Amino acid sequence: MSQIPEPQTGGTREYRVASVEKTDGPKGAEGDNWCRYVIDNGYATLMGWRRGSLGEISEHAAQYAAELNTRNNKTPAAPKMSRRK
Image 1 (spheres, helix red, strand yellow):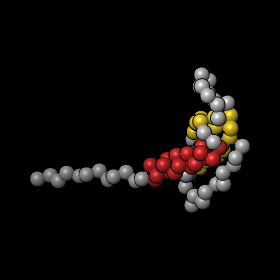
Image 2 (spheres, helix red, strand yellow):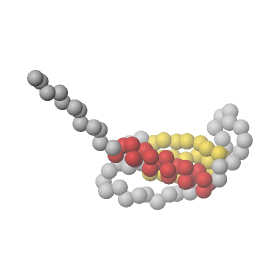
Image 3 (cartoon, one colour):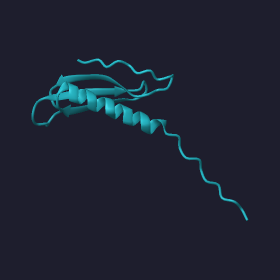
Image 4 (cartoon, helix red, strand yellow):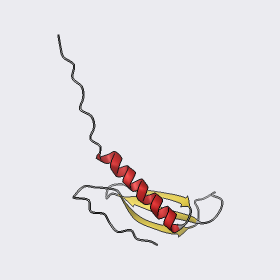
């Protein structure tokens, strides 16, 4: 199992890659060369399976975690207020 170092988060609950490991594919999946990755932020844990090398899947999981953090760190737009005439 490949352990990925935890990023500096500045106290926020950012997603990080918790682990990436070689494994058998999910039930019903064909082929070999499967990896399982776990992404976690302390509240939610996401688990996925993907075919490829350990390096490829580690890169995929890191990019996925970064995309989740980008989406979660966006502040919602302020509601528009209409003026009364």
